[in-house]
Image (cartoon, rainbow, N blue to C red; front, side, top):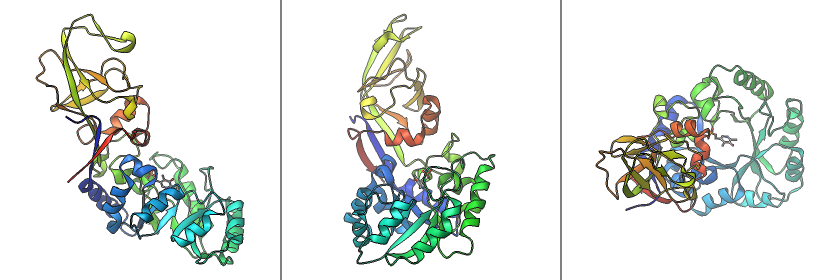
Length: 357
Ligand SMILES: *Cc1c(COP(=O)(O)O)cnc(C)c1O
């Protein structure tokens, strides 16, 4: 009997990459594997997809180095750039590309002594207003980078703030600014992450940067099956008790739920200590033996309780699915007010990983 476990499907992963290729057939793919591949296991994901993609995107130098030390040879891009001038020789030796988004980074790359020049991507702020040089600064940065001996090649990158809002014209404005700022300049361009890939075809350009859709999860609350994506992760655990429960009696901390009938309560070995959100309301579904049953009472550190119904046939040891193909994570996200991104990356190291197929 297995406690909290994520089952990871490489078949689903490969299917999703095919779907992404069909959506953006003329673009190269930078597979985003930051944050332990959104909780899926970065080493497994990178080796499963390396042949199918054109490079990897990560957020930290340590993430890039762990890919290299595990044999990844495809290009790797630091999406937020490097954090210290001392990182630059490491990038150079390990053939890691970096975003440059501010003056400090530009100064550092001009001053560094590198054996091999590196490819840099100039990040342009087109309206997200988080990272990037302003539209007015683009020409100056481009000239400086063009004349920098430590730079082998220049690309351009930007990021949408509202690409998941299909009827919002802000994405089109950001795209126009990006195209305008980069026209008449040599270099690869990339602006589309998952939302851009699914909803804004004109934004695909030379490179796309899929994260969440590669894992088979929608960037919106629409279940991903609508976009021909298959969830890569299934979060499961097991029933460790099936108990008779009397009408009028409460369950769990705070006694927040009181049964209106005699019933059977199932106890599942997963809780907020595994990263399952503590704030799920009563009624949040769990999939057991072909049907959905509601969570009742509060989530504990190591357990949750469900109302299996008076006539249930469920037994100790039966599998419970918290999210996956049978129960879209988008639904759990919607109910809890969390993002699917958060649910996946909050899982703790206690959760076991099982690679299926
Ligand atoms: C995380 C990230 C992505 C991937 O975003 P998704 O919405 O998961 O596709 C792409 N680009 C940058 C710069 C990122 O930080």
